[in-house]
Image (cartoon, rainbow, N blue to C red; front, side, top):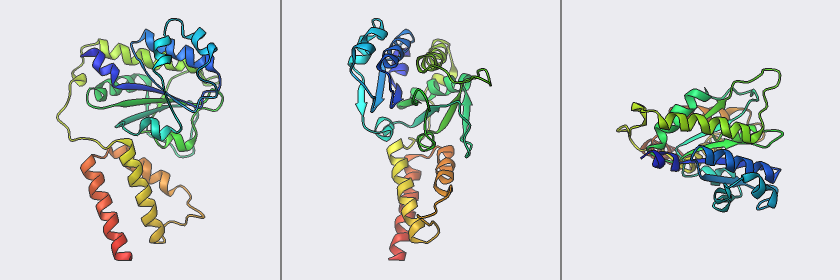
Length: 243
């Protein structure tokens, strides 16, 4: 049962530049019983530097899944958390690391969960954070808060492992309706944008923050599959009237 919870959790690394960091992440994951590693266009992989740093976690590297986009890595996930220490102009819903560990274990009992880590130097872009339901904050020195990639993964992995080892009522499956996966939400956002352009409510030449704000709203609502279908049906009805 405990391993089943952990098997539903994936670590996603976006555009990692140094292969040694991928190996160090694999080692950090294995110490906390995580094994699902997704790599979004790493600069170099596979690479001997990754194997050397993995330190007997080569099985995680061997089974790592390489994808071209973040959307592909999280398409079937119902909960996506992005790690970032950088403040954003559009404040995204966030959790501290302790809250995140509890939430990840609670929801991994029901569906796939992804934790996303960005580039070594610049982290996640605004667009990538907007694909996440929550931003994870790891408390650190306010004057030097940027963690090494493997260190950040180790801290998050420890919080997950700590919570899965504790008897938690929240770890049991609750009777809830099925949540929409990320690919279904992305389809809704694209459909909504099309309709708003057709209505001349959204100017594609000057979109501003309209779509990110709407995406933040729907992410916060944690839409169910049925609700996504209702919203898309409404959008289709509007398009038929316009045509």
